[in-house]
Length: 320
Image (cartoon, rainbow, N blue to C red; front, top):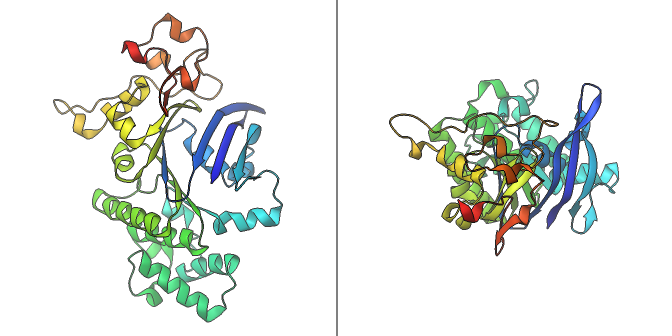
């Protein structure tokens, strides 16, 4: 089990630190997929990267809370332990495969580096492991492919290589940050099927960061909807699609292409507020067509409305 407990993160802005993620709690379990959903700027990637403490390289500070892996805080581990965890226990598939792969090193050298870091295989066994990983993600002619460089490959092939690299250290958890955004629709479907099959076969826990509810429906077991740095709704994937309860979740779902009317795709008016510009009460209230004066009075807790394990940070669910 991998847990984020009441985590708050701040980012550097104009010489000071501004809160960007506030009081977020999430749990990843072996064999389960948790989807973290929301628009760009809501704090999804920042939250996901915190599981590997990657934000520290950009000056992100932990203001409160903890991240716990197998009952041990990731903020208490040594640098050596953290290097093992990155790739050996928790791996990440980044959004843009062209920038995630190093253009000056061959595909083979990049996969082998991960294998050498996280296993004790000798050179020949590592090469065989790399070829097997490429075959696992549906890439044939592995020996030739390992000699090539990222700029000679298609976006779909590069994304498959990133998935192979993520699996190279035999991790327990995978973070997939918008894994299909840069790909065309036909390639997206193949990548989704590949991720789903690998996750189930290996019994991996997965945090899927996305804005795509179609991808959520395909892969997720649990869903957490994020807005302006906080979780606004959390439930099983069945409950989210059966009864989306927070107005933000409802609005996101209406933005799907299947809801298009008269050739017009639905949009949510306004923009996600920047960190530091959040509303005093419900942070979504300025964009919400169901808000009243009470919504802006005081901050709203995640369990303001709940039905079993289904929670929504809204005081007007029953009135909507």
